Image (cartoon, rainbow, N blue to C red; front, top):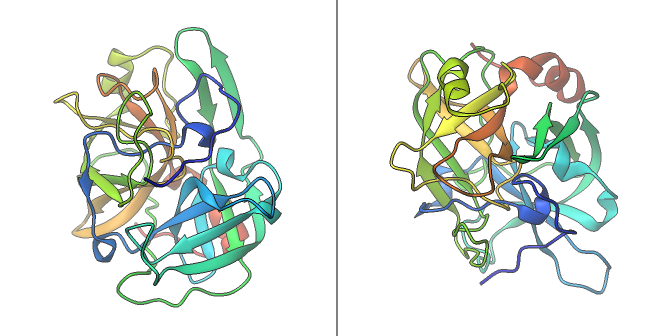
Length: 267
């Protein structure tokens, strides 16, 4: 098993120390998810690299991830793509040139749910462009707000695969997931979920992102094309699949993404 880096314990499902893996997910082939990348971290140069977060490729040099994944010095972090299994020797590795956190990123402590993250989104620029091919490729991001017309939605990542956060995967995991309207989601949870977040839910109460999946993609088919609609932001009550999960809705951050990456979304 690959080791997931742990930070100081904080009661939240999104912080990278709890980087989530897909609970009850399936092994995924990278050719089906070529847009996903991994952020690695090591505390000191002599220590091994460890899984930190997920990220999403939107161009050869630009990625979108969660703001929480970008706190702290970037000198001890790097990006990898083009692999599904940590043992795969063919992965591409790139260093981080710049990053930008959304200026209104915030965390709100709630005694019942732990820490709720708002505006949890950021972007990364790489020093060297990625080499695109079947195993490493960008995905367009949507400019459509709301969730009407979102079909066949999927989540993916290398986070923990059990709710107790004791087992991490060697292979990329994915799961089909439902997207709820915020109105329906607010019937399930308290506090009120803002429009800038997408609520995902498994009606079988089995599948759920978990620690280690932070910054990873929520993709859906819109008008017959698979696009990025969200990056994983936080969990309600840890990795319990009886509760929803929340993704930062990229359509509400198009100005931020365009300003810092030069990449425009699609309707």
